[in-house]
Length: 164
Image (cartoon, rainbow, N blue to C red):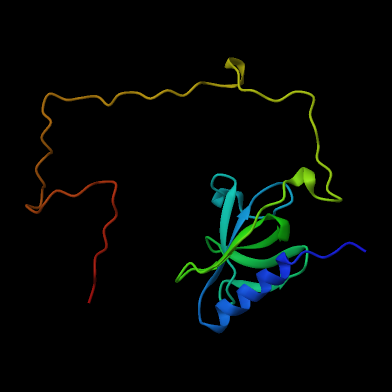
């Protein structure tokens, strides 16, 4: 019989330590084809997930899979993360926790990878190429005067108006 990894036990222990101390447990995950997460939140092949009781519904941390339901942008999503993909678990408030090595997908037992004959490389026929364009300069580089007599505000930054 194959020996079970200590990783899922450590994940559950750090999760319990976080919740017992009132901390917010987070996991950093390496995203691959086996990981079910909202892809729009993935950065550089990784995602950080809040797995606290308040942020999740039906959290189950098995020996091979972590799955739960969570809201992203107000939309409920089913999340499924292989334990092998967890990079770290830590408390958000003080960053204490544990980091792990991620086993490459091809080296995992029972997981088959799909190999292609040739890599897909971008070419001129696949679409337009992007290039930076220098900003147009006007003769007058002074900002326009505000209409209300107050200081000028940046148009790209939202403001908050407090109503009493």
